[in-house]
Length: 333
Image (cartoon, rainbow, N blue to C red; front, side, top):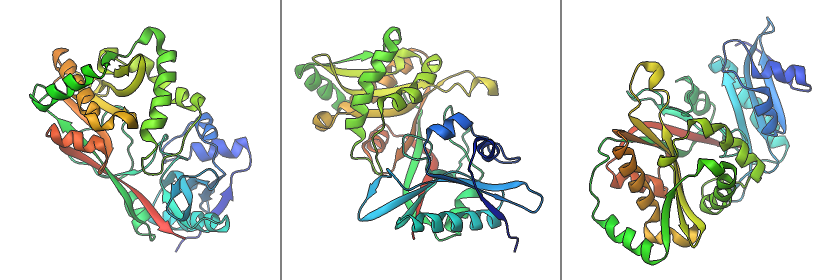
C-alpha cells in the first residue's frame, strides 16, 4: 500500500497548487476562496505530485437531525488508494472538530457544486451539468459512505402535450391575482434581488438547506446573463410581488458538438410556501414548455432534481424520462 504525504494548505501559493494539480479537475482560486472552507487538504506522492485533494467545512454547516455535519468538497483523487487515505483523513479531521457525520461531495452548501454523477446514461452532458470520473462514487462507497440522497435529470420530448388540469390551475391563479411574465434582462440586477428573496423562502425546507447572502446569490447568477434567453425564464407575481419562478436556458453545449440547439434546460423551479398548494410550479413549467415549443425547441431537460421533491413530481406528470442519476454520500464518524 502506498503512503502519501498529507499537507494542509496554509498560504496562497499552496492554494494555487491545490486548485491545479496535474491530472485532476481544475478549480479557480478565487472561487475556492469565496467558498470559505475551514480547511484545505491535499495528498502528495513520493515525487511531490498532488494525487488527491479536498476542502472541509465544520462551521455554518446544514442541519440534519441530531447530527453535527462536516462537509467534504472540492473533491478529487487520482485513484482508490489516494481516495481512501484522503477520505480517512477528512473524516478524522471533521471528527476532531466535533462532527458526527461527514457528507460529500459538497462545496460548502447546496448553492454550490455538490453530489456525484452515478449513472451516466446515453445522453451527452448538458450546459452547467456537473461531471466527474465514473470511479469517484466508488471512492466514497468503498470507504464506508452510504447514499444520503439521490437526484435525477430527466428528458421531456413532447413539449406540446396537453394538460387539461392546468387550465383550472391557470384560472385559479388568475382569480388570485397571479400573472406570469418573462424575466426582464433590462433590469437584471433588480430581478435577481427579487428572486433571491423568493429562493430563500422556496428552498428553506430542502434537504441540507443553508441560507446565503444576497451578494453570494448574485455572484452565482450574474455570470449567466449572457447565456439567458429571457422568454424561457418566467416569474409569477401576485400584486407585483414574486411568488414563483422557473429559471431555464438553452443547452449551449449542443452547438460545439455540431448540433442545432433544440433543448432547454429547466434549472430551477421555486414557489413561495404560501402558494405551493395551487399547482403554480406545474403551471410555470408548462408555460416554459409552451414558450420553448413556440420558439422551435424540441426538448427540455429537468435538471438535477431530488428524487422526492416537487420538481420531480412535475417531471413525472410531463412524462419525463430519467436520463442521468446522481448521489450525495454520508458517513457517521
